[in-house]
Length: 350
Ligand SMILES: Nc1nc2c(ncn2[C@@H]2O[C@H](COP(=O)(O)OP(=O)(O)OP(=O)(O)O)[C@@H](O)[C@H]2O)c(=O)[nH]1
Ligand SMILES: [Mg+2]
Image (tube, rainbow, N blue to C red; front, side, top):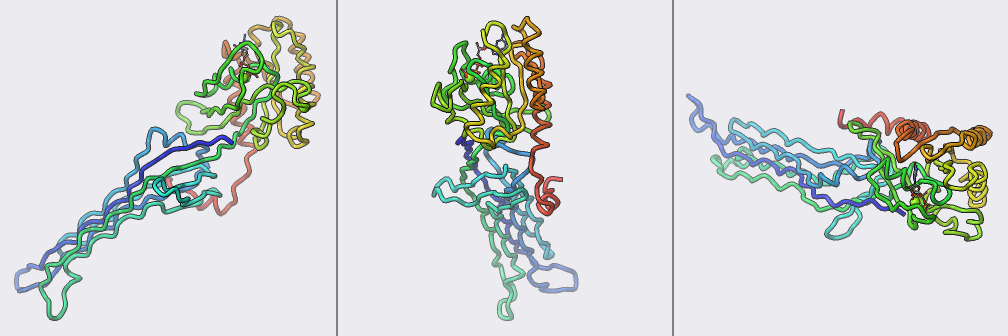
């Protein structure tokens, strides 16, 4: 399976120091100890968030330090607590201690919270050390150190969208157009030998992402092991949606409707479930297609199956953005609705 992995460093806030002070007031001789306690250091909490499905946001931001507690003051004033930090992670993230390799937590549902580094307790001020025989204590504690950990976060990436189609259909080209993934692209079949993942962002100022899996092309007879066979289909078994790419350019010397049917037949031999997944049909290389009949025949065939139909060119960019918006929309519609109590309790950053 695809693994997304990051290493991060977390340091909870140290506690503030306890204060040493004595009450000094007119007409109150020997006022007694009045040093307040230090405030607690801020915690670092991780939360399974619905707004993240990768660990990408940690890549360039691996250091997280919570605020320390404020020192205690005279007149029995306790220092303010340090502000904590909430780190959102996708569901499915497993947190390991980097040094020991020990698993610390497995985020299995939305809103799942884990206190990963506890803030240090504030030191006690000298007011706590007075006893009947020791009335002018000068003892006061330093704040305690906040927990500090090096962590490894691991996420088994579940692709939201799987790309299927014949070799050369333009799968890798599309993923390179939509995401930062840079798979090998070439004008011969079986360029892709291993699955690739691309993380797609809706747009610059939107943090929503979805994950597309590009797998090697499928050919007729793949279920008998022809070409690279069907074994890579297991990588897209759990996707919410399939994008079926069909080359409609004349240069392919292929028959789009026949190609489309051949892939459906192969998917069916793999599993019925695969065939039942929502599928969007995408006619590719529209820039190199002259004969509208091939396109219309494919559109009609998709219509017969009740499937949505898009036309794109990954070279000119035509139709790509429309397809992207549709993907976000359909994937969202296919998402399971989180349980109400998890959903309502889960608003830590609002
Ligand atoms: N004219 C044109 N050519 C394209 C377009 N998209 C892809 N190609 C070309 O088609 C060829 C195959 O593209 P790939 O993206 O490697 O195809 P693939 O489906 O990943 O192929 P495999 O990995 O072999 O299964 C390359 O030469 C691409 O440059 C397009 O929109 N227009
Ligand atoms: Mg490819």
